Image 1 (cartoon, rainbow, N blue to C red):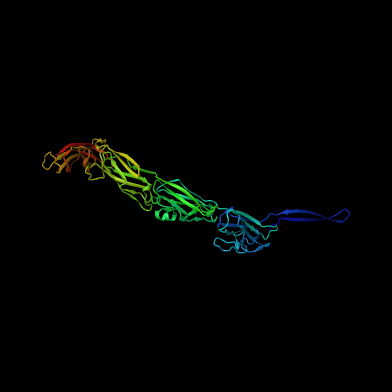
Image 2: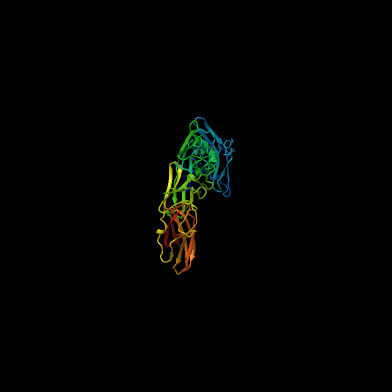
Amino acid sequence: MKITIMTFILMLLSVSGSGSLQVDSVTAQLQIEPDSSVSVDKSVYGPSQLVYVSISDPDFNLDRGVVENIDLTQIVSGHPIVEVIIRQPSEGTVTLSAVDGSLKDRNGNAITKAVESGPNTAVFEFEIALPDNIEPNSSVTVLYHDPFALKTGPETSGSSVNNVVARLDTDKDEVSLGHDLTIILVEPDANIDSRSIDEIPFSAILISSDNFDETALDEVIDVTGIRTSYASLRETEFNSGVFKVTLESINSKLADRNSQIRITFFDVTSPGSGPIRIEKAVSVVPGKISIALDKNQYSPFDEVKIELVAQSFNADRNKIDVLEEKVILSTSSGHSFFPTMTETGASTGIFVGKVELTADQNEKQGDLLVKGGESIRVSAGVFPGIDVTASARISAPASSMEFKSGIISVSAPRILTPDDTDTVKAGTNATIMASITNAKLGEQPFVFIVQVTDSQGFTSELSFVTGKIMPEQSMNINHMWIPSASGTYTVRIFVWDTLTQPQVLTPSKNIAITVN
């Protein structure tokens, strides 16, 4: 109960010296603060927004074990127990109450009671949906007439109604194809409910680019296949009035590189006489791109692995993309090859490919003809006028490699022809012969390599034989060769222990041959 002032009078009885009865009094005043109040959840609202009203009054908390109600249709001292007074600059004052049914919730239903927030809280709550035609710069006052109060006048809580101009922004001013773009809309007028996450539909956002003319965002998403973090612009948290959505991995269907994406929002609840157009422009720029080789130096028999990082080639983020004729590996002597580049996974923007090097001039095996001592260069034309490159060297012939002496010896190669002469003719069979000897006490694995190069240093024949040779054993190895053209050739014999990380077992031997 609210008692403003209580007066206590203490009567003291005493007997005077003459024997008569004397009465004395002492007066004391005790002031008790009011124990009820009313409040709202915000200080500023927009049209159609929800107002959460809280009434704190322990006098209605009769049973501590249950959730209780306050009947809002009751009359207190000739007034509804709760009144909402809306004072508008030009349209006058509007009074809402549960008595005449003008207090409405978000669904348009009449409000008749305030419900305790929990057992024994003594806080009673209800929501009010403000009219959608309320004027800007209006004031809203909630009056609570406490039926238990001894003082005169209601408890009050006030707020204002103001339409705030929205603000449109993005998380970056420049974006690359394949990267995400977040749209940020600050629109307090769309913060309808301070106790829930509000949303703004995609149709309220318009997109312009070199591919679209002010098209609603939901239509743009359907056409481009771009995924979004949510199905609408979502409020970042309760009562923030800030709405966001992320466009994931934008692609060239939305906008071309070196162009702009323009985002537009029409604020229809602005304080002006009509909708306000709000825009934000984002530049589409080339993204981070790179290309790399897996080694700085290769042998003429190596496999070259290539990695390309280019989100702009990530055409479909739902599948693994494959690039044809986008990357070229070339040699300093003028040979080239276009490897197939395959994305490492859906939407990674990382593409890998491989090229088999060969020293075979006829390119019977391998993809790219190389020779020792030259350089190779890989490049990708990502955008017009923009290339990324990487380079490496081809190692010198294997004969320059250090060897471990005393393990294997090899004889100089010899040439045998069908007519047992030294004359080798183009288009006819010739046998290349050599023998190897194991001077080691144990078994020795080996790779016997035959290389035939022409007068320009290009390989016209390359083959190898693998095996094992026993201690102190000699072995003859023959290789059939059919020269395709006349000229001067060099036959080289190499003996390694393996093709992977090879150890040269003996110096190479060679012989010059003239083919008629």
